Image (spheres, helix red, strand yellow):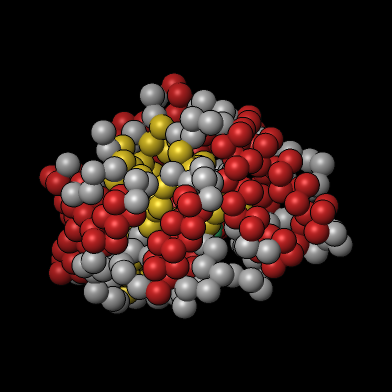
Length: 320
Ligand code: XIL
C-alpha cells in the first residue's frame, strides 16, 4: 500500500514568481494533481511563516484547501512541518522570548495545527532537518534546539501524538539517503527516542538529488536499518536536478540518467516493507523550486513545464 505523492505548489518561492498561486488558478494543474497522485504534501502552506504571519494571526485557508482537495479526491496528506530552523516568521526568530515562553509557543502551535487536522493527516514531518551534515545537532540556526536544548525534540513528538494519536510522526531530512554521518545521527537519535518511549514512527529521506553526484546506492540499506527498528520509512521530496544552460533543454542522456535515479529511488522504497509513501517535490518544472535555489540547475521534476511526461514519469509508472 505504497502511496505516490506530490508537493502542492503554493507559498514559498511561488510568491516571488510572476504567476498566481497555481493550486487555486491553474485548472490543468489541479486535474493532474487529482489524477496522478494518492498523497499530497503542502509545499509551504503549513510552514510557520505561512501559517502564522503574526503571533496572533493564523492563516489556515490555503492549508485547509489542500486537505479538503485531498479528501475530495481520496488522497492522503503529509503534514509539513512543525519544528524546523527555516521559514519561521520574523516575530518568532527576532522575538525576545524567554525559554519558557518559547516552549509554550511551540506547544500551542503543535497542539493547534496537529489538532486542527486530527484524523485527516496521515503522516507529519514533526522534526525537519535537525542535523548538520557532520551528524551534530543544529544548535545554532535551529531556534528550538538552541534555546530549549535537544530535549525539545522528544517533547514535540509527544505533543503531536497527543493532538492526533493516529498520525504517523516522522523525522525528515535531506542528505540522509545513504549511509553517512548524518543518517547515522538519525539512527542513534531514533533509538534513543524509542528507548524513552517517545512516539516517533518514521524516518524519511527528502531525496533532493542531482545528476552532478552519483545515485546513493545504499538508500535501500539505509531505509532497511530504520525499518528493522520498527519504523516506517518514506521518500518525501524527491526531485533530480540537472545542469542545463538557461533556455536550453536537457539532452536525452541527461533525461535517461534522471529517469534512472527516480526509478532506483522507487525500487529502494518498494524493497523495504514499511516504506509506505513516495513523494515527488512538485510534478512539473513550471513550478519547481529548483532553478530558484540551485543556480544553473533545473528540469528536476517528472513533467515538463507544459505537463508533458518525461522519461522519469514513465520510469516510475513502469516500476510500480
Ligand atoms: C522549499 C519549497 O519548495 C520552496 O517553495 C520554498 O521557497 C523553500 O522551501 N526541504 C524541505 C522543504 O523540507 O520544505 C523545502 O521546500 C525544500 C527542502
